Length: 426
Ligand code: 0X9
Ligand code: CA
Ligand code: ZN
Image (cartoon, rainbow, N blue to C red; front, top):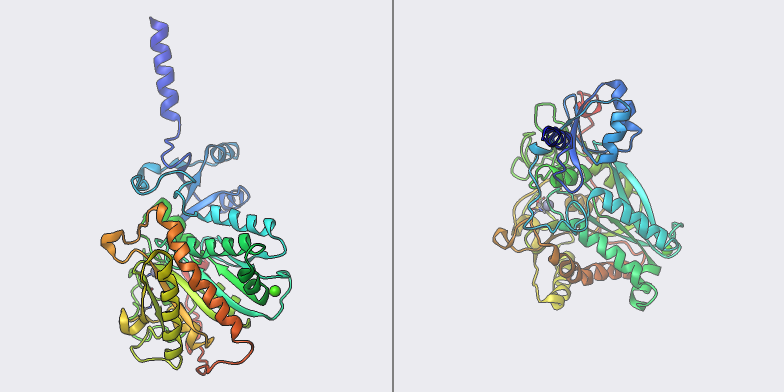
């Protein structure tokens, strides 16, 4: 009898010290940092969720906890403070955010494409985020190792953390081109004549935060130094940055905070530094939701010099897309049809690079149809209906040859980088 009671308490005490594995097989733990710990942790290859004051939050599996124990680094398990993923919307199969890509899953899959198609696909790290995650670009072309001076097109995703579907569309487009290069002569022709670039995850810190902590997170994870976090990457580009307080905000806690100066963010700097100097002909930045194709200007309701051209291109894209699943994407000029934005990717693409630039707001149409949450079974149909638009843009870019467009004269940011202290670089 006595033995049984001892056994009971033994089991109970074992259970109580086992980490509460809330999210998949992982826990969110917190470590108080000092210089020594930062150095030790840097070599452990841990999945850092975010840092706040003197604390580092980490997504840790059992093997990570063992590593930390061995190194005698103290941690507390904080999983219970974090909201669980909505189980009704995410199957839990295929990792932490279901069929959607997490940062680590995307990293793995991009390198897998590269190793499967070494002559056609190449991964490049074009920058690192505030929390030191890589920003990846994937290039697809024949002779991919060489710069052949072919027409370049770029497809980006996930400027906004909660817009998970916007990672999938560019990723799946890249995968489709590679998987069908040999069997589909149209795709082979396009890939052979162009250099197609993908940045499926511009804002990795934000995505990680949205997955583990707060599903509705939008911005990046800059520590604004006033207790608030995040700059809206889609208000931080350098063309007409901060033009007015309607299209963006100077308030750091706003969801459309434009940042302290143009291109203050490592994520937008990475895109800028990567794109400038290459022969890009067209740009797409995927977002959701709304089911609409929009083009500049966003900062004003005036039309741009390429308004007719982009109107025509958007119309062709939406017609082709509608034929796939019958979903009609509306289209129009950003500042005219939706609302004003300043410092967005496409205004910079047109204003500085002088190329047709499109924001494609993926489905659903509105908040009642799901808003930011698409079900996992929507991923493939949304990708499929977007594919003809991507192929059209690649084809259009190739057709341009090397003739120059009626480009608006480039304007460069007039705001110098300030000498005031940057809280993130301390
Ligand atoms: O506000 C944005 O950055 C984009 N919409 S989202 O809901 N995905 O955040 C739209 C940017 C396009 N520009 C304009 N609508 N002016
Ligand atoms: Ca090539
Ligand atoms: Zn967005």
